[in-house]
Image 1 (tube, rainbow, N blue to C red):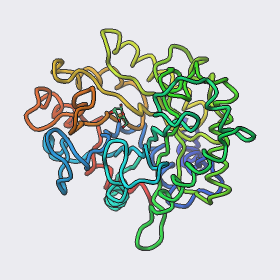
Image 2: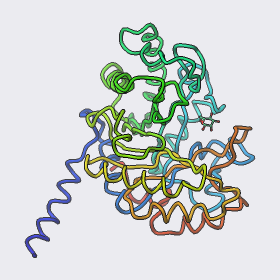
Image 3: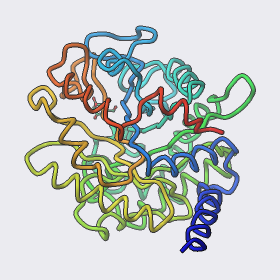
Image 4: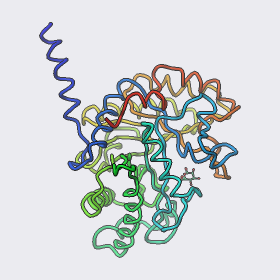
Length: 363
Ligand code: BMA
């Protein structure tokens, strides 16, 4: 018994040390972040918020402010940033946030030990429309090698690469990023969605993108995040999975749009955390949001539903400062769910900025 315990104690650190992100050339800070996130997912759940430092309910660009901090006194641990429109070469995103500001916030978050993740609602390279332009089923095919829009797509990736290569500290260290393109592809509302492209073409899109960023652009500070929308089975989750050799984090997006949410959340969380364990990867709920204006115990419901599972983080979408077709997904000063959110914050399971700073995720 004693011997068994001893060998388990010796094996665990070896397993953790051997875990690396898929890119063999990943920078030391990226490897450390990956390893530390892997360890941390069995200890606690990091809380994330999209555009947390950029704006919130009735404010924009106020230095040091965050709606989450206004409510619980601490910043989120994970910060989501949206790079839609970077491909157009302009100075601000589709959500009207200046790219140079996003770069500065990403640096600030890194310096205080938080985690940055990037999503990309890139425009439709075939039609010139938005991400939501699903008028053609030829878009993905057209941007793959040999397609008529391949060069256009490479131009988009070049712009993304310029942004990513600008994410450097004053000492020249590249800031690790959880990179999450082509998300929610089990739905069909983006041009890369399930009914808009063949399975192999979706996988090829991922594989080309990763190869181009790593081998043409020499970018080695990304942790690649695969993120479906709602799904029912393991088979469905993995149907379009591009491969263990290029994916590091298994995620899913799931919004609360009705009474089936807790059950769906539980099922998706259980499946993804199980698959991540089997594959030696990190599991996450990469995007969520619920009716927090009317359900004042939403945070407790979420936490109790996912408590049994090892998940790295739970990120809620933005609190728009301009009309957006949806309201705030995180609490804000005086919001009806604030008291419940403070309970969520106080729970030992949840991790915010101060706690992750102490974890030294990049060392
Ligand atoms: C959606 C909405 C849009 C936004 C897009 C990209 O869910 O929030 O208003 O433009 O995400 O951030």
